[in-house]
Image (cartoon, rainbow, N blue to C red):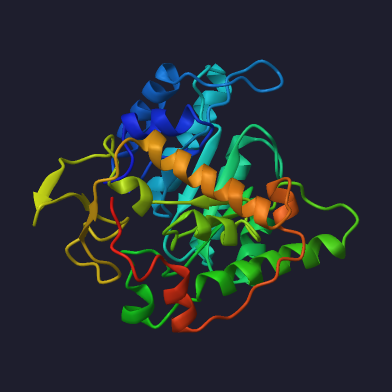
Length: 319
């Protein structure tokens, strides 16, 4: 999202071990230049083979121009073998369970020359909201699928189009599809990852999502950080920043809104608070790792009264 990611936010996320996805609403040339600049600037840990772990993805859509752009970059880097090559590509479209998205995943896998699921170029694709949709993208060659149709704080897709699935239900369906596929086959794919995308309001939401997903994508939580794009402004005595989604900056798009979010301080503080909450969540569940968290999780349906009780109440909170 253009109000979330820039070089400063990217560096802060990378330096604590996160994954950065550059948004596709800048030109492809701008993405490549920013990718190179980030990789040259970031202080990154090395992988097992001693090479820097560049966890920075560029994004593409599914238009004809996108097919040509990504092919040129991947073919050129195979010839030149440069240090700052593209190792992560995100096929980022609102409707990932589509022929064009599937075709793009196959195209990237083919032109990267890494077979069905090689280590050189990892592919993130989405978004989907069903197990069947995720399976189609995995079978096309995706390393990971993004799950989430309409859960984002800015998103109005479910209301305006009548399409979408509640996020927890979608994650359960996709995780079950993956587990069923692996259970029924001897040679399972090690790269069938799940990314929960949207609806994350707190560390507790991360814990719930990670009961089924391998990773959580967050936009709102980082949008109001000190490093995020845009100026901080004051409204009614409270500091805010502008927040726009992947499509809401388009004047002719109906699937989202423009908004403002509270200023949240440095990115490192946001990540630290999330990390602490996730660690505590694992502790409550007796999970020593995120893998343990995915072992037969149980959920309880609660009422609105239960939700109210779950938040601080009957007090005046001092910030």
